[in-house]
Amino acid sequence: MSVADSIRDRVGSDSDPNDGAGSGLKLATLLTYLFLYGPILVVVLMSFDAGRYGLRWDFTTEWYASLATRSDLIGSLWLSIQIGIVVMIISTVLAVVAAFGLSRFDWPKRKGPIATYLIFVPLTLPIIIYGIGLFVFFTQLGIGRGFFPIVVGHVLYTLPFATLVVGAGVIDLDRSLEEAAMDLGADPLTTFREVTLPALMPNIVAAALFSFTLSFDEFLISFFVSGGGAVPLPVRIWGMVRADIEPEVYAISVVVLLISIVIAAMATRLRRF
Image (tube, rainbow, N blue to C red):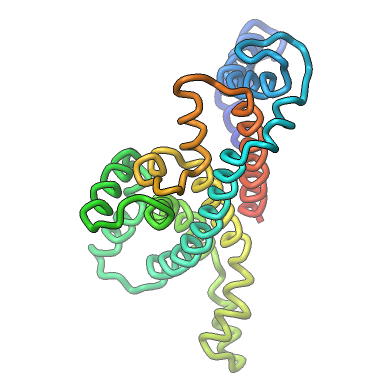
C-alpha cells in the first residue's frame, strides 16, 4: 500500500469524494502543492520572460543565450560538478564501509546503538554548525578556504545520507546467498565482489546519486569554506543576487533545477529495486 493510499484510508475512506469534505481536501492539497512549487514556477517563468525585474509575459530565450557567455557562472557550475563527483566517490566508498561496519560487526550490547547514533546524529544538526566549525578548523590549521575544505565539508554532510541508503540494503540482503557462494568454494573477497556488491548495487548507485545532488546544491558549508578562486555555483548565485538579480541567474537556476530533479529521480527509482 502506498503512502497516498494509507492517508486516504485514514482520513477519507468512508467519505464521498463529491461532498464538501472531499472538495476541501482537494483544495487543501492543491494549495499545498502551490505553496511548495509556486516559487520554483516563478523562477522558471522569469527565465523565459523578457522582463528583468518582473513578468512581462513576453517570451524570450535571451537569458539562456547570454548564460553561455558568462564564464563566471559556467566556471562555478563546472566547479560544483567536479566537487559533486569527488564527494560522490568518497562518500559512497565510506558509506559502504560504514554500512557493513554497523550491520555486520559484532558490537557490544551498549556500543552498537551508540555507534549507529553517532553516524546519523549529523542528520539532525543544523548545517550552519558544520560551516562555522569547518571554517574555524581549517583556519587554525592554516589551510584556509578552497577546493579541499569544500570537499571535506560536503563529505561530512553527505556521508550519513549515503550510509542510510546503503545500510538499508545491507540489512535487507539475504545472507544465505553469500553463505551459498562460500560453501561452493568462493573466498570472502570473491563473494563480496561477485555476490554482495551486485546485490547492493541499486543502493550504492542511489547513495552515490544522492550524495552528488546534496553536494551540488549545498550552500551553507560552501559559503563558509569557499574562496581562493574556488567558488561553487550556489555561492556565486548568492553573491549575484545580493545587490541586483541578473536575468542569467534565472536561467542557471533552471539548469540546476533540472540537474537536481534528474539525479534525484534516478536515485529514487534505483532505491525502489
